[in-house]
Length: 188
Image (cartoon, rainbow, N blue to C red; front, side, top):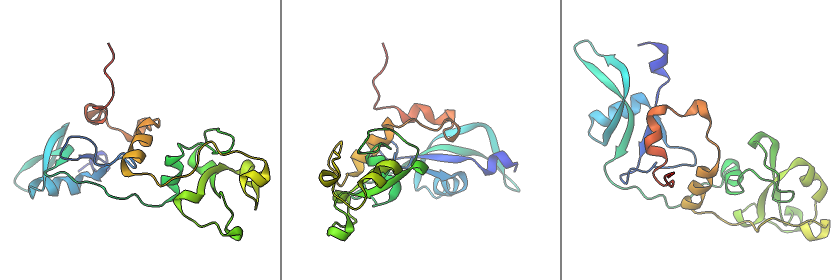
């Protein structure tokens, strides 16, 4: 097997042919997908063109896109730094500027020292400048305004926010494109 095959990933769709998750995009390494296909746990929807793997006696196509056999509903989303930034669409909730995740921090709207907790409804994405300016005060005390109140997002809200983000060109294989934009309006 050459190095290129070893790094291939497989897009995982839910039974409704939508990505299982947009935040982050649901992918498996090709080996896990290959095993799931051959154990009949998923449907192989599309394979990579011109990529074949061999056993001692057989040749196999490598799955590019697979779908779960039954619908999987995500009930909750993890309270993680990435999901928080995604909920706020990588924008500082004070100045409104968009940043890369590495350039964002998070801010407790009501500081912990004043009884504010580390929960969805009290934390927002913030740039370092505004976080330092607000310091250990509430936005009102600091003379600042939030763009919107923090909230606990649903899996659907996070997926919608993820779909609005520009996708990294190097991370998506062309084979997946027909399966990523079913919800988008067709151009006339």
